[in-house]
Image (tube, rainbow, N blue to C red):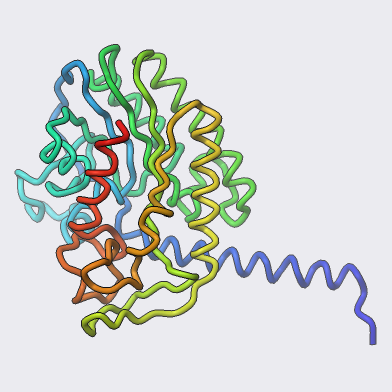
Length: 297
């Protein structure tokens, strides 16, 4: 029996939507632990000339997952834990490691859960705090993965539609560049990519046996990584920024890599050394980004 052409079209469309939805949920699960902000933060002081400003999501902020998840409980987060603009940031995240290891003046405005749209408000706050100014050397944009999850609807996008996500992401980045150049016309803008999470479509979420990462093929998560890389590269082109392709450069350091080479932790993970949050950079991964980005700013 032949199938009506319209039925075939609907079948393929529904299968595509289910596939995208599964991928979006996978990304949301991977990154939701990083979402949110704390209740209060000290006021930022004006930055010196030649400073570098980081606008990044949780891969840059990378706070302790327990502190970040339970930040609403009074007294749970230590008073001396780093925070900027209401967002927790690890003392060993890559922006701080870049400052410590390379002597750069860094103002870290990264925030877990950041999207391309919420970054616009963070840029305004950094300008008002005196951290993005006429003497600023470089502003690094390091976000985009959250645009593919439910939080990415903050700019009106349909996060199940990669084309819509892309178009709105590009518009947001153009707006971000305009804000930066208005306040800091001489500053360079650098787009930093997303570190690799999957390897050949495999996401290794269970790393408990030494040098035997275990996982499943999640091709849609791999697709999201590729879409994001394309979005970031095109955004950099449109705004005249440099693009640092961290996804390609860390392809051998994803969740399925051997323990000592792994830069991103899994979910159930006892073999990745020194990580703060599941599915986020280990200390070795943050150190790699700090050193790589120091040469790009």
